[in-house]
Length: 64
Image (cartoon, rainbow, N blue to C red; front, side, top):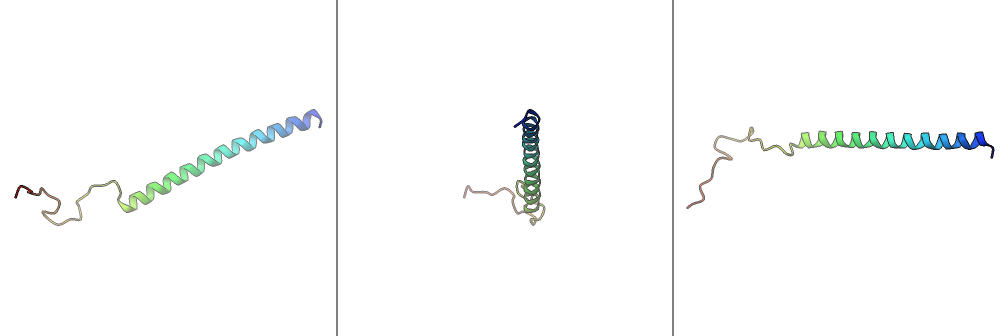
């Protein structure tokens, strides 16, 4: 194998590795965005009482 072929193959391998890293980064970002969208739709992490009737979720007297 001559020198230029070796250099060319090394550069190609380095470029493929860089492309793999970029692809992994995009896949992770997309997965995080999808997770965020699903969590938003499910309402996870929110302690909202906006849809509850009056008096629901208030203090409960358990001393009796």
